[in-house]
Image: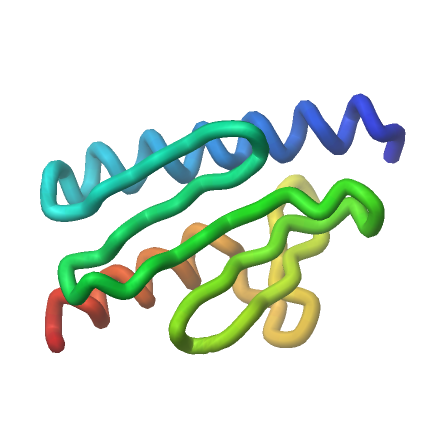
Length: 100
């Protein structure tokens, strides 16, 4: 994939994540999107941070559960170890924050 294709894919994915989380969780979370970084403050004050990593053409997710690296495959961003899709993983972490 070219650098331009990567940038477009990452921009679209971050917007998709932002829109989904805003619509699904409403005002319970604080979201900030800008300059290749999406920051989400959860109800328990922990954070999820999604960032683009252009040199390796990945998306990275930082969470209190650890750091995760996502590769673009089959039209989705999948964790390099578990194969879990990024929004599925993030939703699980968000749901857990409401339980604590």
